[in-house]
Length: 316
Image 1 (cartoon, helix red, strand yellow):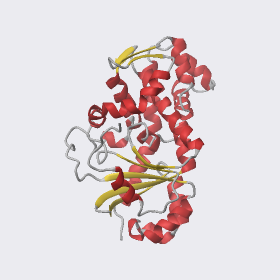
Image 2 (cartoon, one colour; image 1 turned 180 degrees about the vertical axis):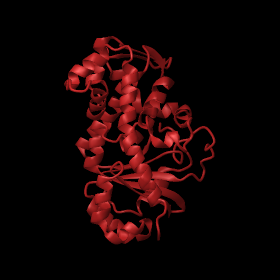
Image 3 (cartoon, helix red, strand yellow; image 1 turned 90 degrees about the horizontal axis):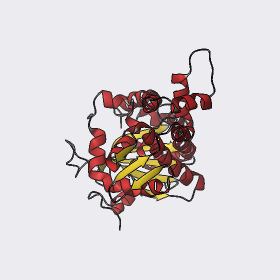
Image 4 (tube, helix red, strand yellow; image 1 turned 45 degrees about the vertical axis):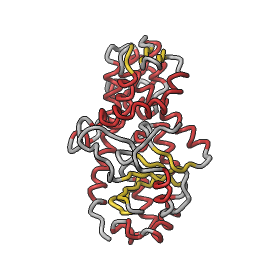
């Protein structure tokens, strides 16, 4: 039986999707307009719906969308789909957003990302922006049969579990795990320092434990490094240096490189594996991983914040 989301239904999402070009490898909707959140924004009946559209050919997709939805774009529309795609791929986190759009009677925001850019982010955590969104419950409304994309989506979830394990103690609750996972993409996020509710992660997780369990349950059951007592909602993991080294070696490439940069003394130029072996034996292993995440996220979040400020001033 499908878990309940808010009043916004799959039919509503599909109707909104019908206003856009069809060539999508993945389309999903996320956030407080879909899944209930605790805290001051808990009244979400009319909350903005946040969409992400993944496309194989951004130039062709923007070209068609400009014809259908010219008013959605800022002044950049006059520069054409090639320039829009260049901005999308080379600035921020590889996503081009159109915000504050009325569509089918609902206020929406939608981001467009190249399939190849998304796959790279899912596998390597280059920005951990859309990959981070997909570590939390989302409503997938369209997905093609791209095996590489599906595999990358699964790899992203497994990487999130591994990173969280490294920052948690030997035993912990499901809620502890899901809070750690939900917070990965907010590590170092500029918006969590300036402007956004500091309890945002808790507000996301607490009302949505069943959705997180649905997303991660099978991964936890199949992971050989964890004892998952699902009935009690409790987990125990291997915190030996050998266990931590195994986990560190499976982290996404960008995070491994950030950890290497933090730990490698100037001039020594150790390879990543040597550094990760050292970190695995360090009592502060979890803190090192957390700092690596912070450095991975902060740069892309600052760039994206600057872009949003410009887009929110869009002209018709």
